[in-house]
Length: 503
Image (tube, rainbow, N blue to C red; front, side, top):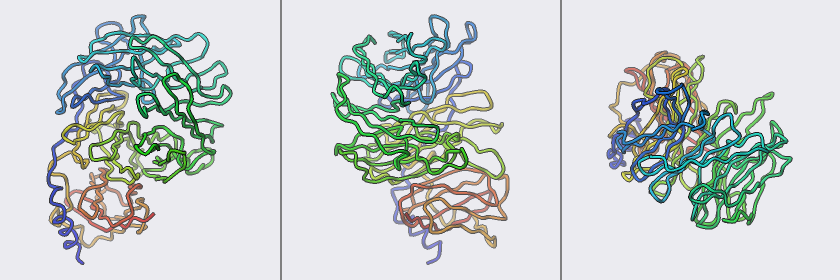
């Protein structure tokens, strides 16, 4: 069958793919110097970003920046919070989070630098401050690594890890009332072993599950899962073998069958002293038996910080995740981009989207997502930070349910552009596991190329923009086994080739 016939077949079998809602990729106006987001949540169709900025009205001081937007990206309200004692208030990718609560307001955590403490902050629906409660510590060395507040009846569960006097981190949970007053506080690790809770999720109104990384040394560790009740009592727990196939756990999703979908970073290999890690999804049943493991995305050094940070369910029964990855382009340094990844309850990739920031072309530029969610329209919105050199900016992106910024969503078309005829273009290896190379000796070097992989229904399941090069590595690991089509566009040229993915 000729390629044009195959392409036309895909299109005619996919009439619904032409229906899509337009999105946006924008950096909202910066109200304060270096204002940007590192976390994000949704309140119905209101987007709320949480990050940091610097004061421009008093002495140059770092504070917390919270802003909310409508579903079109228009700012509705904002607040800039400074520490009353003059410290720099801080949050980051891995600590300091925001959560929507049932009264319509927001609870968030942060750390005042220079003090051994953490603060819980409560804002109302309009982002006005209700209270700040500080948790001081005169025994331990640091107490800043608090994750997202989890709302429970009459208060919140706060969790994370604290560095003890022996310099080892220890998992903890603190239960507080609605005003932030401590009801109880418990450690959950071994004092002589470094560990820390990375995520805690409700199973129901009275049972919660947390995951932790237990570190044995610089190149080894295990994953731990703990179930506890509202009194802090451990109901049951499980710890993996050393350097497990499911990875070092960072996020967990309770499932209706009593099991868990887990997300972690898998140690693929050690090259000299460099740890090569890869994002990994896994399914555990109610007895902690591993049902399946799916490694996906780029495998790279731990220092590359390739990671997904926020996981949310979607109305169609699947999941959307957001974070960051890197794109390598020839001899240039890798470029950091936002990463959206939609997957099924079986861990199969539905689509993967790499997004550049809307900033100019000055080097270096990059960005990452810290939060994601689904709007009532079915569109996906993500928020995070864009940077240009040492300057940071807020970043918001909205895509449709298929991961597309524009309407109609791109479909494979036999008339999309002239073919790169007569050129020696090769794709190898093929079959592959979703990771392969494209050899294009006559590629228009320096021009922007758009690479997309389409499934048998013509849906774009993976998309990336990068500089055209003679040899391009395509990393779409995580695609379900099957037949796909790769389309590469650069300038006025276009190439289409088949891709066969096997396990």
